[in-house]
Length: 65
Image (cartoon, rainbow, N blue to C red; front, side):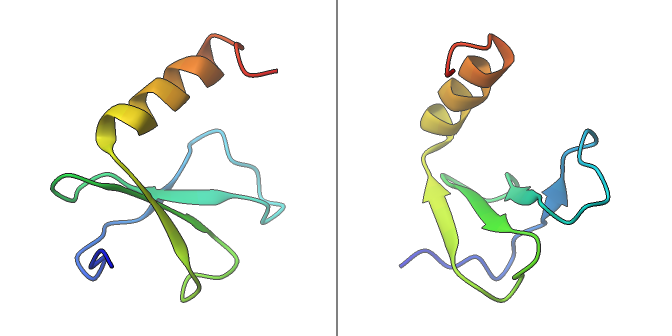
């Protein structure tokens, strides 16, 4: 299990105020954490930085729809 205790969580600047957001922690060595902003103490997904970067590129390119 990955220790996310030192994670610095942030929401996208494009997130609205409806509370339907994810938070990302990309300040950790070797992993990127993703969690539901409504459940900060709940589970988080962990991705390799290269995998997360590929996902973000796909979203920006609208290649995932």
